[in-house]
Image (tube, rainbow, N blue to C red):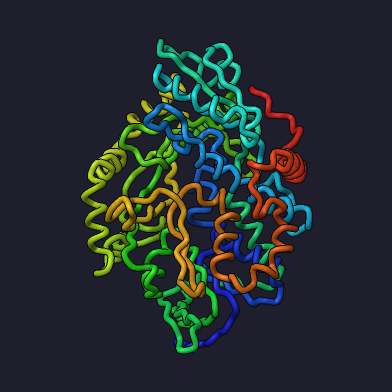
Length: 500
């Protein structure tokens, strides 16, 4: 057992998209800071950021119906959709800056243009979709959106979904061509390659066993080499816990008051992937439906064209499920181990409140392949069982905390918990996660490094021109950003794939 001591300026735990984004931002802002990355697996982007573990939707609220809620008076609240779209624009600008600066190359390896559609059936849903479309239509962030309830038009847009459709129910869709498919696994690996070139010390197969505060206010991490079992001590003034589902246990070990009364609720997922190239060739879009009553927002059914390893794939899902693990590579005791004296009441309250959700998740786990095929056939009426395989997606851990809405409230979203002095921060939660990584990490920088923000602002604005500006109030800027980022990222004027 060696007890090697290493002191560094910043430690990033977890080699996913969040640590990759934060590390890249900090390297641009303060190139001389020493950064160490600790990852328990053998490679970057292997858990939630991996391309097979998330939907790869450049989440910009173009098609996700749960971001636009119908209010009691029947009007549509689009504020969340606008917020998420603005946040995704920050990601596009930052990625463009990296490409323009030659810090990463070949954007087509991680981002592709792809129409985003919302599809609904039934009179009530069609009315809702039309109202949503009208609410977004004149918003400059959603320019170019089309609506149709004409089956012939829909046949042009989504031939695979419309072919052999027997239902007499009214059907409608909205379509917007400025959507994207993002391979967050590829992007994560690119960013870590770039960080390696910038002398960032990336230690794979290094597991953080413990975190504690030292007398001078730094953080000391007990780190175990997974292969050799040797233990090292790493000390830093600032620590970011970006370990996906693994963040909560480490936040609890830090003992900061802000980490108390917080629990985690793990949700697993499955996708069905099409193995028949003839079927794959007939669909070119991300098509989102409406979540079933009682289903969590992250299990909205969608049929997605994906670009993975430069190959076009077709995925349907996700089917939510339940596993007590916090990571795909986690332990069956993760959930139990996260229950502490300070959060036990919060967890129990959440359990009592979410009995229907738990029941729903357990039912989903029990679904046979044939039952899953039945759900797929709501999208592709003539889907054949032999054309589809099942892939296990990533684990997500939803945040449980006490809020104004009551004890043990389940939060669907991405959340940063940081110490009052900004010396440690943890990222918890799920969607829209990766898509809004740049926004989330800029917020974290503002919170944890307030003393530097004034000096760093000019550089941040150079990287992200709309930083600190409301895009909604500057339609010209939206147009300028859309055009320039589409150009840089290879999303403009690209001939769309022809249907086979």
